[in-house]
Image (cartoon, rainbow, N blue to C red):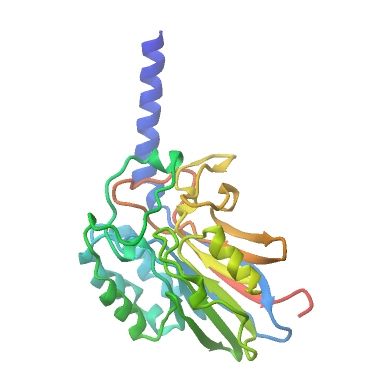
Length: 302
C-alpha cells in the first residue's frame, strides 16, 4: 500500500515537472497594471518592464515572444537584468529586442549579466539564501561589456550605479539604479539623495529587491521602484502563491505591484516574474513567465 502511494506521488511529481518545463515555461503573458504617480496634467506613459530573460540560443519560443514585444508600442522600457544564460545568446538577444532599442529605455544588471548560472539543488532556494559576494570565479563569464554597449547603442540608459534623466511627453523622469544586490555589488551611496529639483517623477531600478535597497530609495522619496530577480517564486502553490523570493522580500510581494512601506514613507514596488529561469531549473508552476505593461497616470490629485 505504501509503495503504491509513493509510486502515485512520484508519477504526479513527474507530471508536474513535465508540465512546468514544456507547457507553463512557454506560456508567456503580458500583465497590465496602472500606477498613479504622474503629476497633474501629465500625459499617460506606457512602460514595458522586462526582466530575467535568461536567454539561450535554443529557447525559440522565448525568442519569438521577445521579438514581438515592440508591437506593444511602449513609451519607455525598463530592463531589470539577468538577460543571458550563455555568451552565444548575446547577438540573438539584441536582434530580438529589435525596434525596442529605439524606444527610450533604462537598464541595470543582475548576476546572469556577469556570469553563467551554475547547477545547484533547486531546494537550496527554499533552505537558504543563494546570495554571493561579487562575481564568483568558478562561473564562466558572460559578455557583459558587449551587452552594455548593445543596450546603450540605441539610447537606453545604464543605471548600474548611475542616475539618468529622460523626457517622455514633456514629463521629466529622473532614474536611479543599483548594481545587483544579490551579488552584494550594490552601493546605494552612488545614487543617494533627493531627486533633482526639475524632476517631475523619480524612479528607482534594481535587479534584486533586497530591503536595504528598497528602504534607501523609499527614504529618499522615490515613489516607484522596479525590480526582477524573484521569478515570481517560479514554483508556486495554487491558491497560496510563492514560497520564496530568493532575497529578503516577503513572498507575498514576489511579483506584481505592491507597496513597500517603511516607518517614514511608502513607495510603489513593481516586481516582474520574468520571462525565463536558470537552464538548470527550466520549469515554472502556477507562475507563468511574463512581462508587464504599466500605464503611469496622474496621481489621486492629478
